[in-house]
Image (cartoon, rainbow, N blue to C red; front, side, top):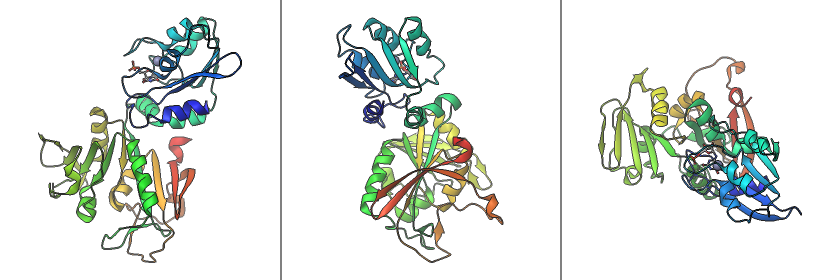
Length: 339
Ligand code: AOF
Ligand code: ZN
């Protein structure tokens, strides 16, 4: 199952809105005879990719991180091919939340021995975006931030180059690649003029104050949420957006992203938008550099309110700590969404 997950991850960023799936087939001596994975949206499912590499009767056990499909979609049901190839056991990581899929029952009906729930937590993490999309019909929202040890992302005048090391910043490219789009704000564009290379970029710019000569506009399909106009101009899509309390309505933006088929988004911006987006966030990537500003007026990661008691804090569960020496990356989830 671990190998299925590794195979599936090779297609990170390429399968949306479909899941990441890997498959391993072993013979009666437990030797791997074929592997496969879902390489990109519209391609063969992982099971088919692996099964097409074996002769009928050669395979004994098929391992797959997601319940095999039993419906006619872009490809015929994987369950049919599993049965046809004479597989005797199927080991599944997690049930498919897609209501069209009923593979476990189909396989059992055909007399195949089915085990479900192997490395289930890891399999659910792998497809956290797909699970949210299918069960809630909503876009998965991640935030990336990079701070000092005292939780600062920029000096009081907005200077932020560079808090983290090149190694950590390199890893950000890998993280971006997993998401359908990245999102930033006009304030960040004005302060940093970042390029933020990605095929789809979301910009929140209420009054259209950013210059269209900014580096971010040079590449990619771009959606600019603003209060002034709708319309399309080459790679720029203007989306007229309602304003709430003087700010672009994030509720509207996130609903619109789902309508546009953007299944996941990585937010990379400053204190204010990070703060406002926090209540929508499904996951946070938080780099920390071993530096202290010692400056109370420097900008912090999430800035959106005043509180009096520590009991009013929002709570998270830290899932993982990775080292990009000299920096670290904390990956954490809001507790009420993961529990
Ligand atoms: C995949 N790849 O390896 C597996 C999937 O749109 P279709 O016809 O390709 O069907 C997509 C559904 O099939 C998907 O939502 C999921 O429920 C199931 N399994 N999908 O794209 C795969 N095994
Ligand atoms: Zn399938």
